[in-house]
Length: 327
Ligand code: F6P
Image (cartoon, rainbow, N blue to C red; front, side, top):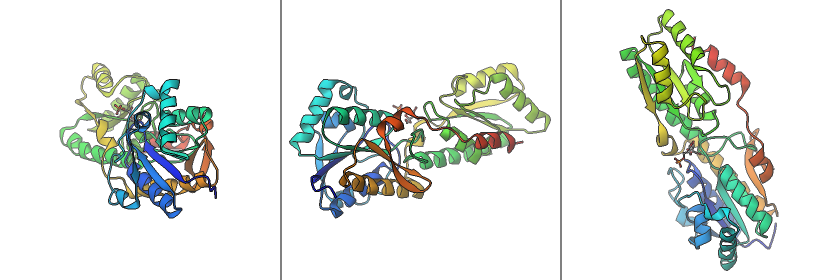
């Protein structure tokens, strides 16, 4: 154990994700178990720059395990991208005698942590918190499972009305440039077609699939549109399809930020707890400049550089399966 680590800080940054609170709870309570003092930094890097932090005791994180959002708030800080902003952040951490930080967020959060730890002598450990699940070095990121369950529940509801009216619904889901949410939502929701950034399905192919469905007396369909796909958003795609296949009765639903809120699933709670627990232990073991992740059910560390620069790929078999099962 690293006896030099006595005070640590934890913060959430970037887009919020269900399960972040469970991660904060795990960090605070594991640290307390090891007699460390923990400070919660509010609003991510912006709060670090502005000195917005508060001591967190184990009881301060009671009753948050099951809550969505983040009690520490979150932000995307432009100031932290400047050397002056990072210098102010360093002054804050020094003023509070912080010996190590745990950053919960996605790629932008890791990039900030990497740049900062290269410039200053305070170790950072990252925890993957994003619904997008696009972080290299972990099989799952905190919030992804909840977001997919929320989206699948929405698809189930839309399916009822789509069936009643014989309609084709274009349902847009989040994921930024990655199709993980879309693929899982499409498979879990039994979608006829899934438009992913990774596969680049064109409109003609989509129209042909929907026409084939009509020939097979498929009276309603669900098309999942990943927000990062190259054909446009769900409204634009629906219009293009309607122009080519006017007999289809089309409607559009954008699930949007509904996917970011809500009580985390059990899987997200356990994942966030595991990662928070080990993140503190890794700091105490003298590690820094790495992100924790779950790979093959083991908590592992990946250097920030790899976690940022390498990309996670969708399972090819899942994509193939998603095309076959809805027939
Ligand atoms: O990264 C999480 C995410 O929800 C993406 O899926 C989405 O593209 C983006 O954040 C939306 O960001 P904002 O909440 O700033 O609109």
